[in-house]
Image 1 (cartoon, rainbow, N blue to C red):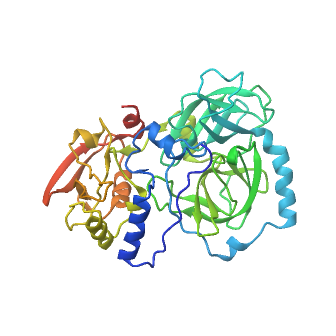
Image 2: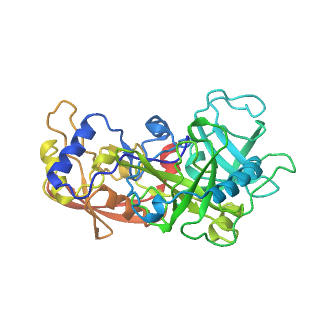
Image 3: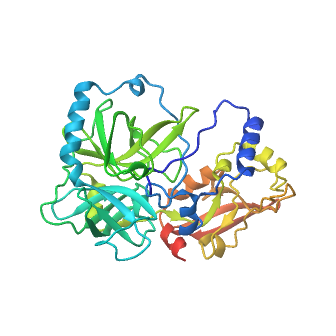
Length: 412
């Protein structure tokens, strides 16, 4: 929970399939961590991967950096002065969220939290917004106010796909809170973010909005996000994106890191005072994402058909020539495990792997790689039944299974 969900540098799209496949294999064989696909392997595994913003289940993202003129524009001195004044005024309404390894530390200290993230108050009675991945899977959460006092909290509602959660924090009466914007912002608007990046306490960062309604390129990330130039880092997740009027327009969700310069582009889930999402959260809606319980190293998630065949050949996986979604982990007790799906085993000593299942369609829709598989599953809801077309050792079969929420698989 230490800041945005973040991911590796992207691979240039123009590279030939075989050359790119070789690079992916090199990354895989030198220890690239396994990423979560339909579902992470469990809370412990996700934390070890890098707990994000706090870093609770952190996922990897491969984004595209903007080359637009707006991305090169700097905040003017006048705009910076306005945002600096807002930071001074609004900082007391922002929170540091910690997952403490020892319960009951609200009145004491938490010297080494398991994760750190950000939240912000939106009402006089202690309601606060944050990114869902900041609180997902955490059991001993506390909120720290600007005066360094600590308060217990509970999760009122969440939407895992949109990566937003509503909290109730037991702050004293009179604690400041943020107003929410009544309308969406505009491209090129200046923006202020307050967060706990890199463990630093309630610091400000500024930038400019590059786009509204950005599409996610990975199924684990929300679509329709605000894109901005503020260079956020783990610990800033869940923080407020504030316009020049001092109103919140978004909740920080994830970042992409690009190129040798490690340029950061940040993304936030838009919120307004009248949004349907916020109304759902206030009613206590808890909307999880559907999973089947399989995972794959992220380097192999977006293989083209040619790359599938090249990886299959070089790793001696024995998966055949029909491209599709294979996976290397099946979570115990998950729908995938109950349906008897078989994971592919990659040999660590250069020997031949053990072939598993290759999913080629979901409810008849053709898929070509693991990323396709993720997006196809996310089109449904927990409780829905889906039919997978699976190739095992050259023979095609169909498998029906019932999707469950991600939390159910983690707690199972």
